[in-house]
Amino acid sequence: MQVLRYLLVGVVNTAVGLSIIFALMHLGVADVAANAVGYAIGLGVSFVLNGRWTFGAATLDAGRLLRFLLVVGVAYLANLAALVVVRDALGWGSHVGQLAGAAAYTAVGFAGSRRFAFAARRAAGDLGA
Image (cartoon, rainbow, N blue to C red):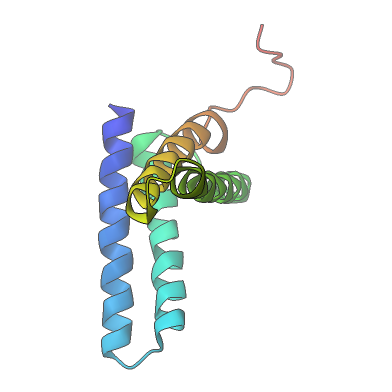
């Protein structure tokens, strides 16, 4: 169920981000600025919806946000690595590489969010025994 919720949040996040990008461009905002604003808001949507709905985090504090941003960064690096490997090492082309990159980003983002960014916190004295 968490995977499905994570994927649905990704669809919502993408729709919100692109809508904002296109609306800003329609209002005359430059492409790069519109893109940055749209992605930042989409990232915020992803953080809140995944934190609360997908993973049921009790709090969404600065620590969780920092861990989430780290996960997003690592997921993006996985995206780039998959793209380069599929495109260059395997020779399967850029389009297949982009699809592989998106799959890598999604998998790493889900795993990192579940196990790190939104993982249940342990009590100070709990060693996980």
